[in-house]
Image 1 (cartoon, rainbow over the protein chains, first blue to last red):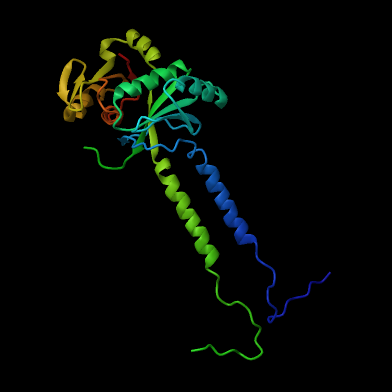
Image 2: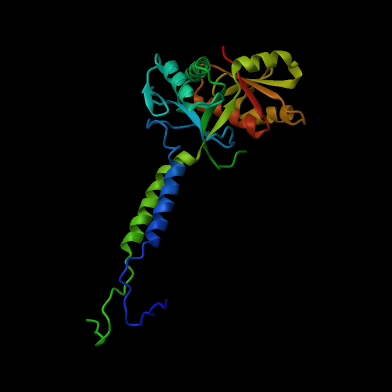
Length: 141
Length: 136
């Protein structure tokens, strides 16, 4: 079957959907990559700066302690009384025994409260613990 | 000045439509602005106090380094109290050997999280791979 060759004067009347599909797939990929990062509470936290990178795990449970004292496990706001139960629930929901629990505390918070969070996390069954930092590339003497 | 039309030429859109391109670019910029601070987040792993306490009891005193953060300005390394600014100079010879040493960190309750993390960060930068935090 021979196809008719279009003459030079004929216009392309169909919409070219390839670029839009291309861009849509890129957007989907970006959203898939950033979605796990967005699973943390929207609380005012100024993380302490650090030069080194330590525990890296895409699947983790974060405990956020804001500068105003608000507390959250992943995106769920909790109180100090309900922290352990919420953490136990999140650890069980993750389905892994060695889930990394990251303490995201404001740099101005006194260490006494961080230690309480660490002991609560241990009591809830956390086996791997880490404190969150903000990466800096400034020169360290 | 109006552009003259070529008689008999087919009429079509000759200019590239920039609107979708700008639209998509702005969406990408917004996504990157949101994601960048989160991507820069990292963390320092800590060993659990129970496990590290048992391990510390098994290890000799010479194989571990004890750091106690007394305040934002002073730190005790093993039994020597040094200014916070001299921590790196004091730790470097202790962590410089070939064998990885366990670094046990204690911290006073009123010291800020920023100071605590900066001490952990310096220890890690000097080569401490195992950091344990001890409670009271």
